[in-house]
Image (tube, rainbow, N blue to C red; front, top):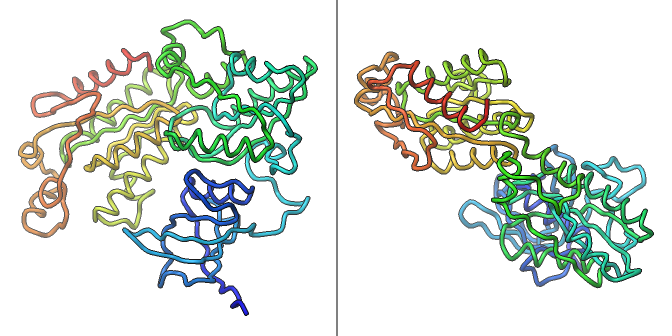
Length: 431
């Protein structure tokens, strides 16, 4: 007789793992998986205490804490601070007609058995659809067309799924006016940025009853950016609704969100320059600007964090998250943490570039000059061993090799440094 399941903790996985589990609930296996759903193998952050024993039921929640699925453990192994769980997945709650919708266009998020897609030509896309793809989908007379928009974490920045769905609905209605049978569904799916994306698209198309998969034409990123940056004509093969979705994601430079990250040693002058740049942008008056200074953020957003490597990373990532949200809504976020580690700066760049621009300013004032200034006495205390893991003394500073501008304030006035940054912004059409 099988043992009764053992209740386990609730876990909130990373976005990719969450979408893999949501796909399994739809009966679709992730790329590389050989076992059909509801069997899954996923990586999770380990819960407190011992690793879950076979038979344990882990409740999986979304980022807001709402239960999404229950994962019944068959085996678990911990490696490099990650928990690999093999098991089966089921919905956390039985589906009912009264369920609160999750995500934009919730009415289009239908399971394969509820979508009218038998023998359809299927277009699986994460980006707005161009006319060539639409024409290829309708090449076989009388065949239904199913447009599937993927919604999930992206490896390649692009428009929000809601904007892609809005544009694709316009194309669906266009097909219907032409007498074609056309449907649209939204499916949760991660983007990997490699061959797994094609494998997953094929699996999703088959699950929804497609007999002919029409590959969406990937846009030329350089040509796309030239058009969106205003240096090239609009592409003729993009319908207006699709062009609008691209433009919503990437407005012209002077309307586009921007994260301006200053990095450098304590005492390098980065906070003073950042404040002067913020004030000058406000004076110009064409952009909304917010300053996220390291010390101010420490007292508010990151109150309670220490100065270990983990806490310093967490502090910069919090700044990056808030800055990226400001950029998402078209604002300019000026940030001035020390940000000593290249990997953390790269994560902030990725957050910002998902919906806007990112510029890195390295205030490369040498350590000796920063230590000479030492207005707060921090370097002296660090040299005396009173401050552990102090950047430049007992903890490393990884100099960026990808800075958009390098400034050394040893012989450079704050006004000159400010004007150099403003010139950089002006030359890029960002003001």
